[in-house]
Image (cartoon, rainbow, N blue to C red; front, side, top):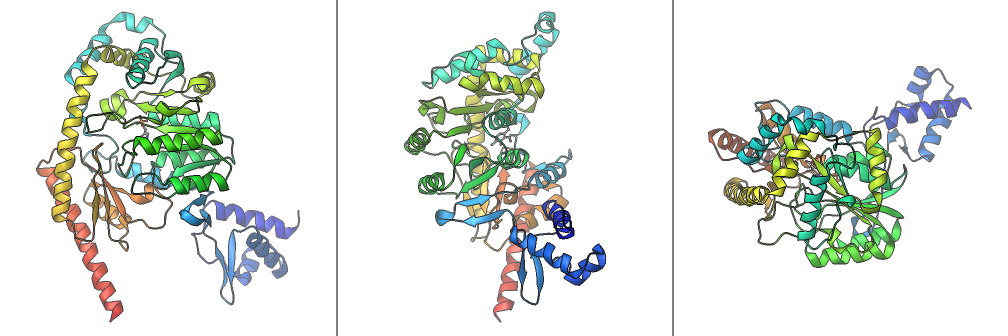
Length: 476
Ligand SMILES: Cc1ncc(COP(=O)(O)O)c(C=O)c1O
């Protein structure tokens, strides 16, 4: 290997590990000669090599700078090709920051536990704990507890999706189901398609598996069909990972007509879909929205869901309707998570076999609807006029769009000092505009919560005022 290649390789390593920020200046040629001990010509060749590889760019008389690596190409319809995704450490830091017990959890992804653990469910768990026969069974190995899979299969059938328990694999939560599905369907370097603003777990999984992500822009109807069609024409997309019901973080539910259109295209192009449907039960209207699985004629949809958003983290059991991929998923499980807690599986199966779950869901929806409307009204009345609040009749998140020049991370930083969490949009999108926040509105408005809401408003107002003042000054 030439010396210049050696130097280029070690600089590349530093760049890819985030040693320098995007658009940051690299050491000058002279500085690099001094620190590396290589000759000027070697250093110049190394920099030119990195420029040719698209990692850095040069500006005349200014030097070399780090290229914006996440976004390589922009297409019509704002389809974006994202590779070299780096989000895991951001999510890790964020989740650590909101973990302390006394934080007011507007940033949490779980509904308030007060709404989740029904007395009946906890009583059943208590009984199961005392029952010796529960411990003698070994049905926890993949694909999971048969009775639980049967109950889940029946729930699909209630929606017109005829299902056999053998199509279903029980997993350690929804995220496990999604990750296993993605592992089964992809190899490093494959192209997958995501919605631009989406659950960070999808970005993390793509980073972890070394996938290239094509993202399509957010759309008022929840899905940009034209951009989707274009993306599929331009790139060899293997898998789409979509969330179309009560989408996290924005909250919309895509219409059945649009779902049908998407399904038709997936069918024609023989593309797989991983459907994230963990909020499927949290609709406020009379009728449960259909899943994409409903339209799946070719067994190309892997439908993933979970009990964690309806019954809480203690019952964090998920599943994937994996159809022909059940074997493969089980193989992966045997090497990774191995098994899901048998006591919890057994309790869930009993709970579902009565009408308890239905009753609980009805109550939960009623409470979430009431609380979401209360929060919506509060924000509408108190946030500055240049903010928009997206309200959709499902789930427990409000998506607040702050003025374009406001950075939601600044609001997050200020609030976390006051022990209040929110979820800034940088967790969910690679888009440079980061002026949205997700607020969990499942908490009864107690004195504490009211205080936190007031702080949030005050923070946004102050930031808004200072940005406006700054703007005025710059105009003058
Ligand atoms: C959209 C979405 N998908 C999947 C998951 C993971 O679900 P679970 O907690 O069951 O692993 C979450 C959790 O926050 C989520 O918000």
